[in-house]
Image 1 (cartoon, rainbow, N blue to C red):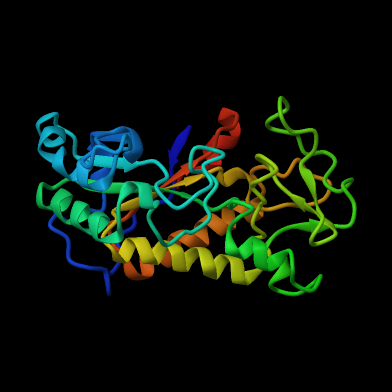
Image 2: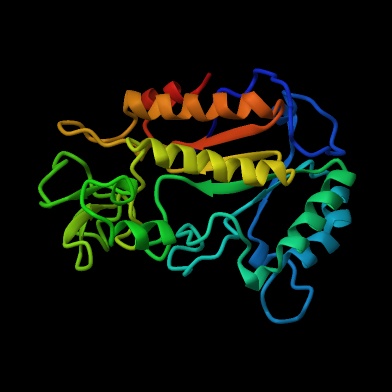
Length: 278
């Protein structure tokens, strides 16, 4: 379930690049959103994989359909063990889909047609091939670099937390032979969870968001947000500290960007979902 999270407050837009799409902080309320995988939409260079050049060529078609917003599923460099939701580089384009210049041209042409663009951003976890994890597993235990992720000497912590993918995962912990410790993962074992108790992680995520927003992206869909924080004795979903992380992210955006949207994915029971509004 995709939910709007604290979107209605306008704020100064200082430093964001100029965009053609009309500025309106409530634009999302009547947007006609078309979700797509770049790799599966249109192939401009006939290599069998969709790309940003192909998507740019189809903007007139999408405009004729009445589409006002495009929602792009993950297009970042990735081992693609989870359809791109295992990101190995937050600030680049999967080379199979084109170059950064192709992305910029696509954004420019979309805005020229008053089509906004939302991108998918996964902030709960990364690929185990991400440089952050490769650095963390070799860092000194207890150091800020190691603590980019959630580590333990035992796989018995957080025992009240459910396993999401019971068909493939036997535990939320995985042993890392390099670190000689267990790391926490709510999704697959190749997707270690980021540690939002480490202030450096929050700053790094904000830096990634600013990178894409400064390129002209109109909003972000944040994947798997109920699982951002871990606390012993809880089920580690929808914690108050998780909601505080989301509020802080919204404030960071409001400081520089006045009309950008955040969509928070919270696949939870209705009574828990309510907390993500406003």
